[in-house]
Image (cartoon, rainbow, N blue to C red; front, side, top):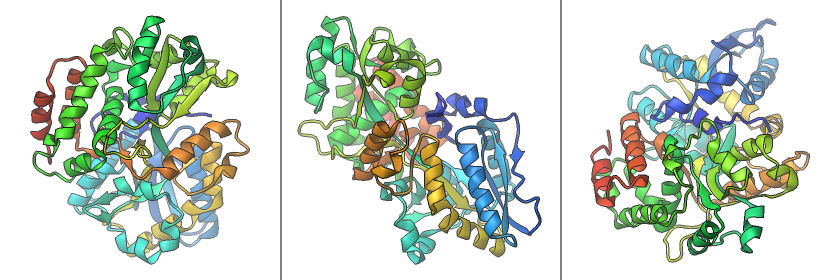
Length: 445
């Protein structure tokens, strides 16, 4: 598995939190790189901008080459950028009305701003007319592509749910089983602390790592509707009583020493939180699916079979469906509203044929990811990581709702306030009510 250690930050895109997105920039080139797929004759009618660097660049380039080989008179010219370079250039290009035909993005807040600016096409009718194409994609991947009930982007590439990881050896030391409910988590905390094992590893310095806990707890406590109202811009949407309850659960965890001592100063950039798990100093960790690759590269838990993984458990009495998940439901391609009709036709053909073919699915599986394309466990049979990929796919394919990470879904301004207040919540610097009041103040901004 070749995931970058910071691959979760690669998908933060044009939202706040992008400061940690250097993971992809570090593995890409210093500037844009063009594929040579249009140099063998034919006619190029459309353009495509996306990201360079492993593992995605090889799969993206292969898709363009497949399409161009079959459509020599309607080719697509790709340009691939490092992560930070892309964010700067795509913002400038869109603002100047010179966007590429196909705009790669993260959905959510960034897409919403493009929609409000009339910069991308509505694809709702396209999917209605191509139901068989839509059916090839995981239904949950459409959430971040949907703005005000209409679809403005095509889900592509991979899904990355947040998961509960655990060290089986740590559980053996206390003679307990992995948690099946939130009540089990609370019961385990004092047992691990008694053995000088941190119940959970948490890189609190990063802020977005804390956010994953809040996302799951609110979903399990109230279901996805509360944040959906926030995303829709509903006034005072954070004032739902379940939000206060969730914030109290977070601070209760802190007071119960659920996390390692000094977690607020632990860095995610250096994988310090990951190290606590694979060295056995922490028993569990709530983190993105990309954590598996980090554990595999840096510790022996994967090789020994002692790394466990599952969906976050349900809360006893909570309204949320325990099958729900959160994280990155996919990446997204939108079509520029400024493109010519000929370019748009080529883009739609690329989306509805090449990006849903078997080679696309196989390419992302070989890269170590779970694709947005529907499949079955047999697709992972040849991977040495088949057990993990099967569990990951099982989570995303059975999820009633796959919520996009909050800092991706919100505007940059709102995401900044969100992350700062989440950090303060975990540091016990704000009360739940103060948190709610602060976040209500940036709804819709």
